[in-house]
Length: 266
Ligand SMILES: C[S@@+](CC[C@H](N)C(=O)[O-])C[C@H]1O[C@@H](n2cnc3c(N)ncnc32)[C@H](O)[C@@H]1O
Image (cartoon, rainbow, N blue to C red; front, side, top):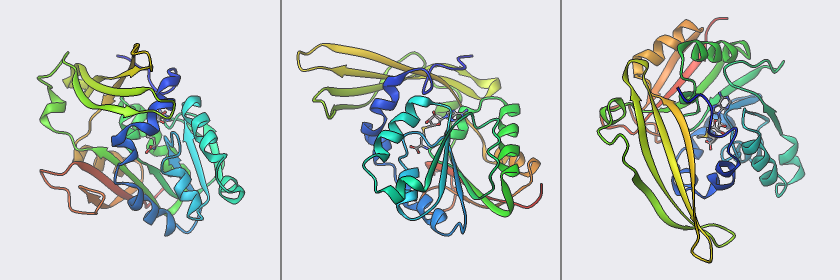
């Protein structure tokens, strides 16, 4: 299993992340901001990355702790924070650590894990450990809100193993270089419910010289009732399961699988 090899040891990912059109245009910001505004207390975002959601939460007046195990992603977040007003900067605390094992000596009213961060936890032990940590950092009634990709049969046994498929092309970076990206399913581990995936970035400079940069990582997929069982084992009740960020119901055609859970016991 490729255990590492992505965000935490490849600096290029943090540098390119905010220019990936799918990420920049992801329609989840309003959804998470609504939960943040009504949280009524401190918020923890697990896998906060470059602050795509974290910074707007602080700009909306919320006190947020951002946790991520990638120093590169957090460094990019800090760089972006420099252009924010002082009061926004002061509402954010950044912590470098893994989401499967953390002790922040703080309690939160809302914990979030936007953009499929929980899918980086491959084993059930890591997932349970993470959910127990979330529970330990909340008071009764606190909410845990997170999204996962809805598993479908292409994930389960991709017939495209080994083939590069284009995601986007011709994106201009601030320094004038051009970026395109493909993705590739390298291997499907059916019995362990994860795939080895590569995102392959091609960066072309002004002289036409192309660099190929690979983000390789294992990615877990989950089925709905599996997640419900995991949450129940760790002291959570499921309040809602959505299929999209417009809060529509989860259906066979949904793109996302979004859980709103509430802490009901220690
Ligand atoms: C897809 S990005 C999402 C970033 C941000 N939440 C967003 O919505 O743009 C996933 C993030 O999770 C972080 N991550 C992955 N595995 C992690 C782990 N085990 N513990 C903490 N952070 C992790 C990565 O470093 C990365 O920043």
